[in-house]
Length: 153
Image (cartoon, rainbow, N blue to C red):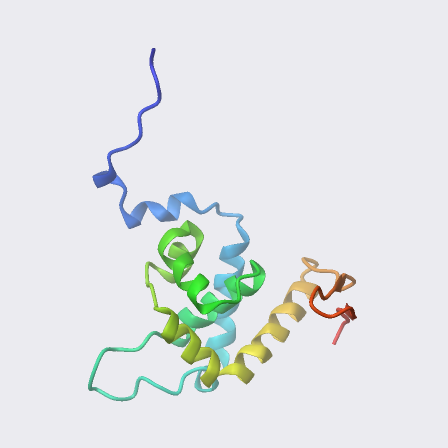
């Protein structure tokens, strides 16, 4: 019987990842959004990387993309985000193959929490203005019995 044979693993290169992510996938919209938002106000997203000593840091765009991807896919743990950078094709495409460790991810969140929250609000406004999100969703917090309503800013 004839079966489909897998490709040789030596032929599976990072260059083929571009073909694996659909041209209409939301991850491409996220990539473009972050490039524009961070370019407009780059100083508020990066404080490190000025020293010539030691390993070069990850850029602000890389870590912001990582956080927004996690936000949209309900992944908040730094350790889970690190795992996604190794196994998820969308994440590999989005970050260009970069794989920051959980400590780097957590430290960036600690150092730039307010900037990240501001960017989340910009993303929500952008999605609402583009018709991707209505802003009328109601959710219930499972830990505490309270109703949370997402309202327009």
